Structure formats: structure tokens, C-alpha cells
Length: 417
Ligand code: HEM
Image (cartoon, rainbow, N blue to C red):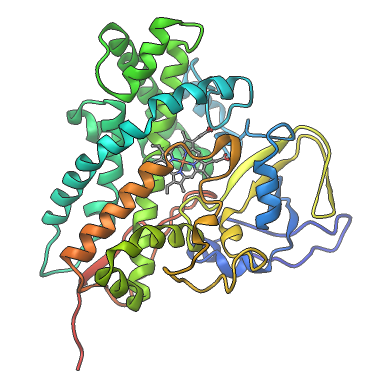
């Protein structure tokens, strides 16, 4: 168990918080509830925040709290991994790790391309793809929902939105794999080199893809950005488009896989709430919000201070790295009544900070919400008798930010008399 006692010594705010501790990975919430509201974790070299009010204030002040580090590896890269990445890395900061004015310019153009029209137009395709995957799930034996549905669906949808050819899906998924470990995990030197090689190949693929769209734009998200570029290259360069595509294909992927898996897990653990959704599907959108509050799939995010600040009465210097425990914000009793209770009827569930707030508010939130809603609509209608395979152990990938079970075993409900 990671310790949370205040260390004796020079700084009373130092604690032994370790987000890679197996017990924390399996269930972070008991420790999140015990941590001081602001503390320093020497093992990470980061200040750790967990209160809703503090983290909301950080998100609302991009001048003081820069996003520059959000994609950086948590731990230093080896020389061999740097070499393997090649000369194109580090990539230009364009979205999640950019600050104004670059971020403001690029985000505005992305919002146009990521329009409500394009997201809504995806709904029938999300539904059709989900139906196809659900129809392949076995009815008479246990199956892993992650492998069968919650992993392939978001990957397919984000690649479709971007415009990647369907036949490249498996290749792209293999290159995307482990980017999570690279920037948010603690990979071994050998793993760093392997992932770096995949990242370089994936970057080269995106570069070629954008080049092809510039030569011949189509009806997809990438082509929308390309049209802006062709009208005025100063608005957005080809390199910036490539960087956006590279980032988006990751952001739109595991986050939503984990949301879907967390949703099905939590609903089936609270069977009466699953049944409520089966009886009244209009509860589903709020149930998705409650999952994001109660067990979010992006459990932490990062910032770096641009000047000395005080948070919760604690002095924090300029250049301090902050780990924002979003998982803590959803369980903050100062913000949510009885926060450890999972309740799909909770009226203020949607006030969570799972998608951030303000300048960098998640661009893919409508898509993620739509995918989770459709999966729940289809599953509750097709298999109201689903249940978790009893006594299974959930494993979570060892990283600080992205959280969802790697396998989720389900079966049809067996009545016991
Ligand atoms: C459950 C699913 C998801 C969660 C929990 C989530 C969470 C987040 C969070 C916490 C941020 C950072 C906000 C900040 O820095 O203030 C973010 C940013 C972002 N997300 Fe998501 N995300 C999800 C799904 C998606 C999807 C599906 C996409 C794309 C299709 C996406 C694209 C982005 C992008 C591009 C940004 C950066 C926006 C900016 O910097 O302006 N996300 N997301």
C-alpha cells in the first residue's frame, strides 16, 4: 500500500504517494480520500492536488498553470529511446500541451472541423459498428467485453473521423499501443526503445497521410483542416495538422474504451441500477455522467506553474509540476453529496471535471459521450440479463492517467434459486 502519512523532515507536505503502487492501481479511491489536499510526491517530483475547487481553479487559469508538460514522459527517456524517436521528436505543441496564443489559434480551427455536424453524422456509423460487434459476442459462454467491444469501437470511430483507411486499422492500433506507457507510465529502457520505434513509424504514417489529403482533400476531419491550410498556410501548417492528427488518434481511443468498460462494470456491480437503465433508457445519458464522476477514465492530468503560487495555503514555486487527481474531484465531499455512492439518478453528476474545464476542455467529449450512450442503449436492450463473471480480478495498465480494466469478463445472468 502506498503510504500517505506526512513524512517527518524538512517539508511537512512531502508524502510517499505512488500512483504506480499495485494497490493504488487496483483501487485508487481509498488513498485519494486520505491524501492531504496539497502535497509533494518526491518519487514523482510533482505536487499533487485532489480537491475539486483547487483543480477547477487550476484549469481556469492557463496563464499561471501551463499545459506544456501534459504529453511529456513521466520519467526521463534513455539516449537509445531518443535516438529511436528520430529528429522529428519532440513534436510541435499544438493542442493539449500548447499554451496561448498557439493553442487558441489551433483549437479554434479544430472546433470548426470537430463540428456538431461531423459528430452527429457519426452517430449512425457508431451504432452500426457497435451493433456488428455486439452481434459477434457469444451468448452462451463468458466473453471479454474489452476485446469484443469497448476496445475496437472507439479505435474504429476515431480512425473513421480522421479519415484513415479502414484496412489500416490493425496496423494503426498496433502503433498506437503503449503510447500510454511511454508518456504516462514507467516503461523499462527496452520498452522505451520499442515504443519509440512505433511512435516514429506512426508519425511518418501521419505525415504521409496529411500529404495525401493536401494533394486530394475528401470529406473527413483531416480534410477540413487541410482546406484551412490550403486557403491560408499561415493559419495552420501541414506540420501542425500532422501533430493534431497524431494526438487526436490517441486521445480519442483508450479514453473512451475505458469509459465504456468502467460504465458496464459499475452498472453491473450495482445491478438494480443496470435494471433501472434496462427499464428506462432515458436514464442512460445521466448514467454516463455518473460513471465519469465516480470512476473516470482519465484519473489525473498535468500542469506546470509559470510563477510562484499558493494553493490551499501551500506555497508552490515557479516551474513546479502538478499532478491533478481528477479521480479525487469526483469523490470530493465538498462538491458531491455522499460521493462514494454510485447513483445514476444523481442530479449534479454532470458537474464532474472528467473532461477538464475551460481553455483545454476535452474536444472529444461529445463523441465519447455518444459512444458510451450507444453501447449502453444497445447492451441494455439486447442483453438485460448480463452479469459480471463472479470473482474476476481486474487489472489496470500501470500509468498515472488512463484507467480502465484491461479485461472485463461478462456472461448471461444465471438465476440462483
Ligand atoms: C471518456 C473519454 C475522455 C475523457 C475522460 C477525456 C478527458 C480529457 C481531459 C481530462 C482533457 C484535458 C483537459 C485540460 O487539459 O483541461 C482532454 C483534452 C482533450 N481531449 Fe479528451 N477525453 C476523452 C475522450 C476524448 C476523445 C474521444 C477525443 C477525440 C475524439 C478527445 C480529444 C481531446 C483533445 C484533442 C484534447 C485537448 C484539447 C485542448 O487542449 O484544447 N478526448 N480530454
